[in-house]
Amino acid sequence: MKNINLPITSNKLQFLQKTGVPHIAYFTNSSTTIKLIEQDITYFLAPNFLKKSDLGFVKRVKDFAKTTGLPETGITSSDITYFRFNEIEGDREDVVEIDVNKAYWQLAYQNGYLPQHLYEQGLNTDKVGKLTRLVALGSLASKKKVFQFDGKNYHFIGYKFDPVLRSYFFKVSYDLDIIMNEIFNQIGERALFYWFDAFFVSKEVAGYIEREIQRYGLGVKRQEIKEVKKIHSNNFDYLKISDNHKGAPRIRTFALPNLEAQIQFIQQYAI
Image 1 (cartoon, rainbow, N blue to C red):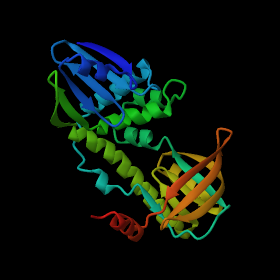
Image 2 (cartoon, rainbow, N blue to C red):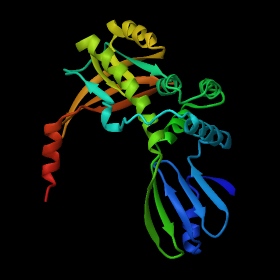
Image 3 (spheres, rainbow, N blue to C red):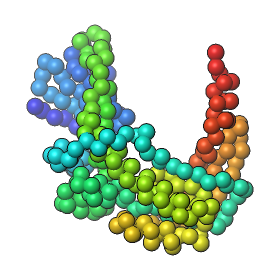
Image 4 (cartoon, helix red, strand yellow):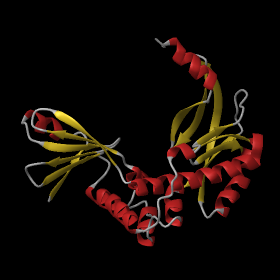
């Protein structure tokens, strides 16, 4: 089997269509795999930031996970909260962001989904970047949409995924969510919200949160926040968070959950 890596921007798929070459295409949210039917060749199209060494690292992580022998966890994305908000009134300037540093990577190791040598390689940021780590863990949950091209038309074959590996990925997210929820409950109204692996809280509880995160064997990283503004637009509430990231001003926007407004918005376009 000849394997060829190409950038995600490659026009290889369009070329195969125009020239009528039969193939099977596997699509995920971030990559495309093309297997030729009449030749022993596979093309893998991935984001440009992934070098050949990165792709090799991603493969080694997934290959190891297949050999752990650990059972399917039964956890799915519906079991995970991902974010929680407290009632937020007005603008704030007393807020700090506390990130669980390399949270998913550390929890994957604690669960036995990573061997020590790959875990340590992933922590070496000179060799393995943050996005590569995320892609490596995300590959466990990849769900591929499969099409077969007969030389003229595409035919949908179905979905391809590994339910056991997929459950490992969600187990890691679930473990982090349990930790985030427990700490969030402890600090009450002094927390504005958490979003995946980051708390946005008043400065007075920042030290406490850092100690609690470290108690779970996880690392922390603090980011000063310049301002949190609450914005109301089109019946929805948003938080606009201003800070500096790597020496440059940055603005991030988070939509506050509002089920009633969402229903009203949808009803406007209902037939």
